[in-house]
Each structure stands twice: as structure tokens, then as C-alpha cells.
Image (cartoon, rainbow, N blue to C red; front, side, top):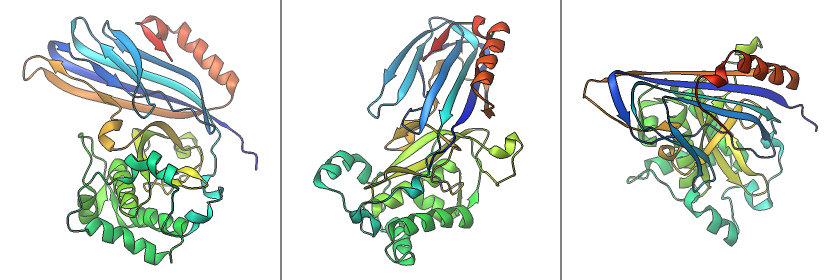
Length: 322
């Protein structure tokens, strides 16, 4: 079935403020989307102030990372990441599974197991087997049907847990998320991928952004996690490949999930990390603003870029184009 592409623009602004000039260590930012057959990058720009040097590197998971160093001191540090994509929104749930994946346990070939080894190994301790027991309950509930099992796991998290925004760094241990029945999108994603690994199913962590059609005037779907960075899991199912599972919003495809980084653990997918050197009380705080909107067509994208240039957005400091 032919699917119409959506044109989506993301602007992610992060500002750090200090009471006096401080010096900055290297900062690393992941903002450039991962292009695949379901998503094409039309434009990607990064503006950084104050004066800096920037280089692009590729990590072990093939994520694009902007590494920034600063020669001087300043009272404000600002990153403005802006990109536009063409999102085709593949319906992954419609992809056929290989015979060895239709029912649990999911069987991988010897070659697949070698390639997927890091994503099959649990990274969260489960000394009493509580997480494994929680995951096995969905196997019984679904009668061994792999897709029904994963769907039931997502629905249990979405409907049985309380979504709780949390802005401090770090991700809850999956057992804490089960015990507290609450968490953020990254906590939900970590719980689901670790539960899958306990069942011998390869899974990885994904960070990116979430498009909420309700913010563009469409019917409110009760979307959770929009307006900031977002996280979900990808599960490797023979025949279908890496399939997104977002337990926060019960999504397995579509144009809402905008993938930026895929990693083995949540800690490896931090959108922005860095350090500063200064007085203990110099740090005044951080402000983050994320805007995700749908563009009407390519003409609007070109017009938008012309407006931005005319307004001097590109002239306020060095801009890295990706």
C-alpha cells in the first residue's frame, strides 16, 4: 500500500546560564536523524554560541554526533538544532514475520545471534528473576503469539502505569518502574527492552522526537511525551527486522516517531552531554524547548529557510550544516 510522506520540522533549543563566565569542556550532541527507507533528512543545521570548534563523529552504533569544544569562557551556552525530514511512516505491524518468529520463543539463525549478541544480553540486574517472571506473564497471556505478546506488554505499561515527567538525568531500573508503576518514556522503553532481552528477544533503546498531530489542530489522541525528547524501544523480529515499540503511546510505526539515535543502553543515547569549570554556585539553570511541527509541502520548507536566512538566523554565529 502506498503511503504519503509527511514533512516534519524539529527545532530543539538548549540554553545553559551561569552567574559568571565559566569555561566549558567538550560537549557532545545527538540531534541528526538516522535516515533509512522510512525517513529522509532534508535539512539539518546546528547553531552553537559562544565561539567554538565543531567536528562530526560516528559512534559504534552509527549515530551522528556533533562534538563541540570552546576556546574561551562565557556566561551562556546555547545550542539550536534544527532539522526537517520526509517521513514515510511504514506500518511495521503489517510486515510478515519469519516462521521462526511467529510464535515464542523467537529463533534467530547462528549468524543473526552473532550480530545481535549485544542486544540480546540484559544490562539491568535481575538477581531474583522478578523482571523475567513479569515478562513471561505476557507469553502465557498471548498463548505464545509473538506479536500479541509484545502488544500486551505495551498495553500493560500504557494502561497500568502512570506517566510521570522527570527532568533529572538518568533512567529508572526496570524493577523500580514495575514496583512504582510509574515512569517517563525512557523508563518505559528501558523496561520493555530489558523484558524482551529476558525472553531471548533482541531489543535496543531509541531516542528521538515525537510528533503530536493534536498540536497541529488534529483530533487529540492523548499523546504523551510530546514537546521534549522522546524514547522508545526497537525489537528485532526475523522477517520484519527492527520494529519500533513505543509503550508510552502504543505506537509500532507511523510518522509520529522521529528516530535520532539507537543504542544498547539509555545512557548511550543522551541528547546532550558536557561539562563546565567554574565556581560552585555559578550554574543558574538550563532551559530546553522542543518544537515539532508538520510542514505543508516542500515549498513551505524552502520558504521557511528563506525567512530564516532573511531574519539573520544563520548570521548570528557559526552554523554547522549536516
